[in-house]
Amino acid sequence: MAKTISIDMREFEFDAGETVLSVAKRNGIFIPTLCYHEALKPYGACRLCLVEVLEGDKPGLHASCLLSAKQGLVVLTVSDLVLKVRGVLIQLLLKRYPKEKSLMDIAKACGIEDSISTLTGEHQEKACLLCGRCVRACEEMGRSVIGFVSRGSERAVDAPIGSHKECLGCRACENVCPTGVVRFSLHDGVIKNDLWDITVDMAVCPICGRSFATVPLIDKVKTELEALSEAISMCPACRRAELLKRICV
Ligand code: FES
Image (cartoon, rainbow, N blue to C red; front, top):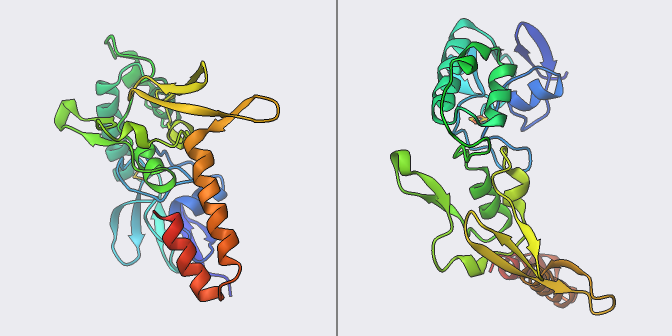
C-alpha cells in the first residue's frame, strides 16, 4: 500500500527519500523558500520553509526542505505559529534588504505587502541575501572557490585571494542565485565576475574560432574522458574506485 502524509489536512502519497517540501511542491501547495534549490542538497539555513508538525516523531516547527516524509506525519503549512514565525523572518530580511526584488516577491506571495509599503532605504534592487546557494553550488559542482567571509553585518560571500584562479567558470553559482546579483559577462575572450573579481579564459573552437566554454572546464572534461577510456579495461569495482579517485582530484 502507498505511504501517505497529511499536509494541511489532505493526504498525499510520497516516494522513498522525499521531503515534505518536495511532496508539497509536487501537489501545488505553496511553501516559501530562499536557500533551497532543486539542483542542490538541502541546507536548512533560511527557515522560510518552516511547517508545523502536529503528529510525527518531533512535533513543532521544522524546515520542510530537510524534513523527511514519513508515514503518519501530519503537518500544517499555514498554522498560526507558522505564519507568525514566517512573517517575522521575512520582515527581518526586508529590513536588511528593503528594495530587493526577489524578496519582495516572496513577501507578496506570503501576503505581507503591508510591511513592504512602510519600507525605506537606499538599498540595491539586486542584493546578496546570503542564502548560500552559490557557495553550495561551487562546493557541489565547482571547486569550492567561494565561501562566506566575516560576521554580523559584514558577512558576505567572497572568493579568497588565491582561489580566483581555481574557478572553472561553470557558472553554477550564477544559475542558482535567486536575486541575479551573481553574474558573469563575456568580454574579449574571457568571462568576468566583478562581484568576486574572477576572470576565466574562454576556449576557442579550433575549427570555427567560436568561444563556447571555458579553458578549465574543457580541461576538466578532458581529464574525465581520459580516465574513462583507461578504465574500460578494468573490472567494474576497480573502474568505479579509479574514476572516483581521478574525478574528485
Ligand atoms: S528553504 Fe528550507 S530552510 Fe531555506
